[in-house]
Image (cartoon, rainbow, N blue to C red):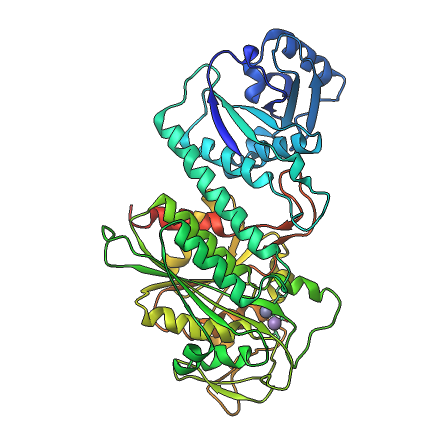
Length: 496
Ligand code: BES
Ligand code: MN
Ligand code: ZN
């Protein structure tokens, strides 16, 4: 999507679709509607009186040949009650405009910005919302929605020209939203077309395109490094595993912290010998969403260039049953030396993460964040709306939560505490790989945390948020890219 800046009086803007915003209560005289000429305003007042225009959140009112405007159509989008409006959710409004345009085969959207309330942050939000809205998971349909893409977004300045800071914010928004869409593309691929090898190839190609260093380790190296819990999961599959490492190490950044971003990369999770029911098993093609999230974050920071060192580690494998598969009761010595009794081969994510976290520390990471579709239990707790956040280091947890709040991605802290440890104790090894049904998201997180040791660590359980199960007015059904914007925001602000 091309993004343009247009200045000059709004009534003279020629465009197939001019999108404006109004608030509930006085939709004909609030939001950016205020900037429209009297003729159109009068028409909107009539619609308000008749009850057709209310300004309720994401209400869409389309008017052809709006009086006094050069635009051929006017789209009024409701922003809900002014007191309830959350700035981080601003992105949903231009997002809605873009999806309305797509559904009508309109390729160009003009977005009227708020001449008085505009800031670099709001402009960035608007661009992110528009680009993420212009995405459909339809790669494998022969009749694609691609023909319905919005090719260009014109940002209208209204009465105040755009500042340089606002123009820079547009570029940041574009980079971040395109990175999130890259993550969504990876997550959307079926497992026959997104094997560990193919995921690694995508990571290497991305690294090359944006000037990052990358290394990929295969089965021999994984075994000789004694990444035994990673290998245990991988050994059941004919697809060779890959340990994907991508580095962003700007020389001008301080030596510490080195942030380790570890992403679960299970390209398909059958459950292994503790096999899953076939109902909805196809969803397990998305079990590499954590890894895809971290690769998206790397793609963005390679272009945004924050002053911070970052290393991404993605352990990629399938989890399959088979003659070589690991089995319940097996005891595995992880790379860190901690021994693990396998009680359920479907709790595989924590096993691949265990060795990947340890590896990240050996590679110099001094602060860790992992993202993983780790547990069904987190979706019971928080639904598909909110990511579960876990960690012992309050400051590090709070940084993640603050960034999530700033970008409008819902994240919520769940507890980790020694009192839960006995749930995953083993009668034969140091720890067991499951802690039972109750508190499953917590014991899963704490298992991963065992391998962070004293290093500050945050775990994001994105099992629920990785996917939108329904079309939203501003976002297509399918992979969500949730988490990318939060982590990019965090890294951009870490050494500021
Ligand atoms: N990949 C799944 C978790 C998952 C469930 C992700 C639903 C997305 C949607 C994970 O590997 C898993 O199977 N977890 C088990 C853990 C249990 C065996 C302790 C679970 O949640 O049932
Ligand atoms: Mn599993
Ligand atoms: Zn899994």
